[in-house]
Length: 383
Image (tube, rainbow, N blue to C red; front, top):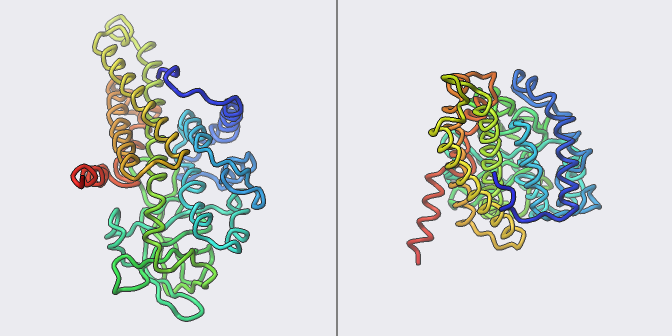
């Protein structure tokens, strides 16, 4: 991609990128193949990221963080992780999707109790929203919690939960009033709680080093101290985090697509067919040209969304546009890249094969393409 199009980074950000790149090359990349075989990253990866200062960078120093709220630093982490193609280490889920619930809706006691271990990577986070019959339609969930006076009693199940096996602390959404469609609470469920069980680690098309599992809750006793905010406003709390979640998805999609493009560019320059490099065929050159133009446009769009997010001006509609367009672009790019690899692209020993299978879910999670279209179209036709 044309790096000249990108907004210039400040000097300390360039220094940060260099340190993050060295971290991933030294501590993560050597384990990539092993984690793919095992179907799970090692817990130590989170601890190493914590020691490097890469977890919950936004958190105040009193909790052990560095107090950095500029989203560009998170963008750099995502881009550098995509470069080494380790897609199962969900640092952004831990730092930017789940932990902020403690920042925005937790009490000071909860922040002091939990954030230091999240920042160090000692405890790994997950979130329990999706159910077998309720994905994007959060209001349709069946998991429920009943107020027992000094505690809540949680029952239900969740599925497709990232960090489902490794996770130590889960923010679990549950209905709290059957008479109100959107009355939900966010409950802090910790490893070892009686009645909390994990199901099987689910086998997936891609993201093979990411532990995705089912979670089951049977009369789990949740102390009032483990409720985030108002136990009836969890639905609205979750809505507040969707714009950033979709921005994260857009950045991840673009970064992965860019890596697929670079891999393919290197491959077609070296691969021979009919006595000449694959790159010498007009079709190859035209396909690569179109991909680069689309990636450049995508990068300009994403960088602008990041700027707007830093300015607290990113709304749900623009975030939906970014998530939709970049996940769709990722799908097109990896498909074209597999095609240009020929038969090699179908072989797991080639990295493009993993990038292809990993990419398919990005048009589904964090809100499917169809849901994004619905959000955007509502905005168009409501005016």
